[in-house]
Picture 1: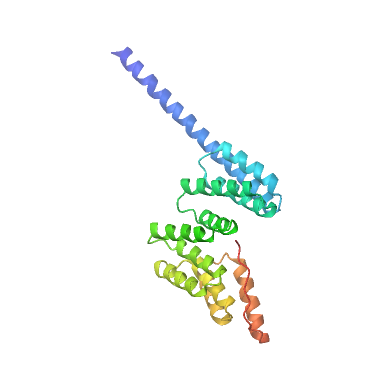
Picture 2: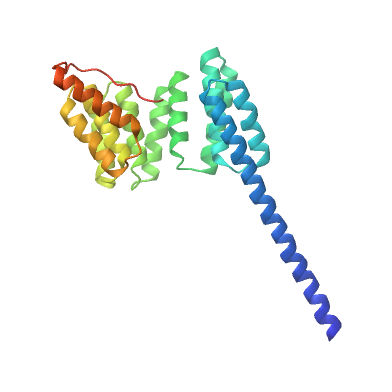
Length: 237
């Protein structure tokens, strides 16, 4: 009896110990991946894309299940591919974006990046279809509508853009991104007071948007000077 009990306890302890080791290893992999991604992002922001790519590749080897790593790789290949007009790099970017979405089907930045890539590759219809399918698959999610609005605005289809933003805000009135892009749309059409109100609504929900404070300040100056002619503000792609 005692021998039997002893034998039954040893495998259990071994399993617990092995599980602990695996958990620590997984946590270490995730930490290493985050560190490499962070270093890569810093290099990317400095315009050192080839170096950033190396760190993102290392992050992928450390933790192959992190969707952000594939997004970072895709963004870098995208940037390099467009600059060099390199179709192979653009194909790599498309593959990485799709891998990201396989791991995280509602990854907002990845949907945006892939849609823009398809436009850059001369496949604008596929870019719109990607976002529309995302919206159809998530009828209560506001983010696909925001990205559709951004795309339509960039194609000077402001009426469709506003419709999608209204849908997004009906789903989630507290979506600060929707209010921000609504302000952007108003500003581009010269409706400066409405733009300021929309930006302020966005800031009331999320005050950590320094670019919106700058936009409001610039618009107030334009209003004070009486130079309220329409201008299209820059948007991050």
